[in-house]
Length: 332
Image (cartoon, rainbow, N blue to C red; front, side, top):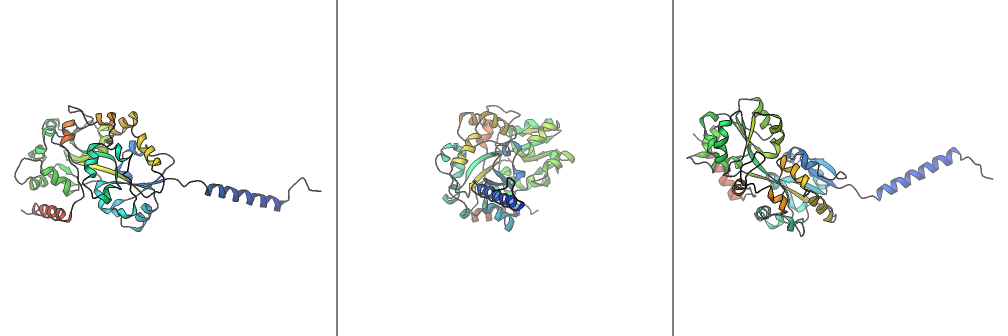
């Protein structure tokens, strides 16, 4: 006759079986989708769109060659990267992603930009955001009108040693080309207080600087809390910063398509634009965000967008030319 009470050994054995069953069940569940990104590049509104059941992992692309960072990418499903770090990516580690219907969803601007990459790169890059650079002016309303017209205002005598530029020779040289003056690059560099990509707004707020040139997505929150700051987008156009997603996943593209389509919700679009992030897709509502006929405080005008420019990957010859031009501007 069996006892109505189990022995201690029987209880422990039962517990072991239950644990094994639980572990076995968990092992049959799909692993979380992993997406790699450098947090500091992305506004909160964009990071909030990433599905809650995806695992977000931070990476520093400045140290992309470190084995830790390479392993992080290798063990991920998706990687978010801005255009300035494209040359740091090993494209052989990624799968083709730019296929129908994803490519069909892109607008003309993003398709044209993709066309500047070679086929191996363009087939693996999906644009998910474009961010215009903005001019931020502190306590100088009289500069706003001139800044809306052209970049020439940067050579104003009152701005000598008062401008914070991006730490990117290519961005600065592209702006210099828009300035109507002899030796514009040399003159532009003489106006600099410093070159910084990380703390430019802290410097602007807490120093004698009067102007900073900043990606819109990195400055929108400061504009809301500091009334001294004014936002300007010259009608001559601005440099554009692009963000892409790459895939290492064997998952069906449906999981990515589902996320991309969720970005096109009108309230999501509005939140993203309010934080300086524009989606490069071809829906009417999205495209309306590029088509303002007049200057607004909330973003570039259509004329500014039409005159703006992007930065494709440089050939070796182009790199040499830019390096020589930059070095020549350093000579007295």
